[in-house]
Image 1: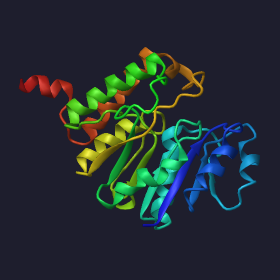
Image 2 (image 1 turned 180 degrees about the vertical axis):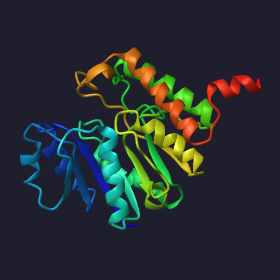
Image 3 (image 1 turned 135 degrees about the vertical axis):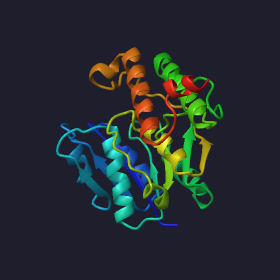
Image 4 (image 1 turned 90 degrees about the vertical axis):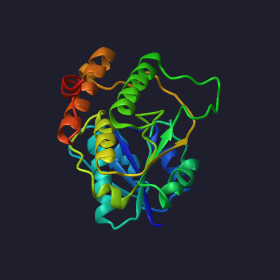
Length: 241
């Protein structure tokens, strides 16, 4: 199976080089989607001529970076795609492990809560609370059994990506992804990956830095994705009760 490994980045000058050195140990086809970095990230990438680079002229968002990776996977005729973040939360040595179930499933999603690798690690309280809440929404509305709705360490079959129509360009993109995956009848499996938080100072940007606002935004994205894909909304569900 020919698999592309993609890393969406934005202003990752301090992390990009060590991460890429490690990723290249486990993946032969590597893509970095530079989402409009304004720091030295573009210069750092010049040291890796063997990798593919897509650069967005301006910062568009996490979901936009993944959309570009999806498109390159399809256009390049790859059989699958693995995505991971550049902030040290995902261990490149686990790329083959995350990709392996693609022989049986359309989407393989890492879960930081299926298995405890390090009892000393814990997520920031607000992030964990929101992840738990949104994961509960997804399970209740879509009939899923997810334990981690927001892990960016994933693998996809190209044939699955060809059936998705992702438009959400921000951090809420995974919510739209899950709704479309269920609507398309895609096969989904979670695999355990370590919970690692090295830099709790990272921000979402703008109003999303407020946890309550972020949760309301995620709910709005979920409701719209449900409507757009033919699922009943809360109001429709209540009307039939």
